[in-house]
Length: 127
Image (cartoon, rainbow, N blue to C red; front, side, top):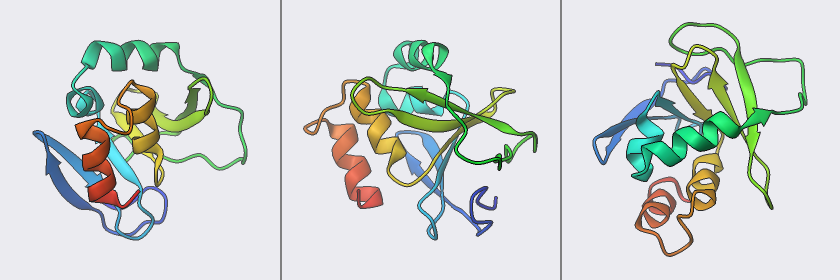
């Protein structure tokens, strides 16, 4: 699969039985539907947060396309102190995280600095 941000080939990393599509060039990450919940260990909380997310204000007129269905993705926003914006496939194929956003999401979902998930993400992606 090529990166939906910079069009470079992505590599696949397996973590906790989750295949993470990772771009070495721009640091973007694609997770298929359901993989965020498996990675963070709390599918119900992830689903609740994603349901409560609101459409993010558009910064540009460019939209990213889902690598599965090739349709425009929507930007969603969640978080309280720090607003986190990620791209979500409208057909529920998955989520796109720009560099550092997956770590922000893990920290937001009660996985603070000392959490194993946060430590692993920092080690893997240098955040």
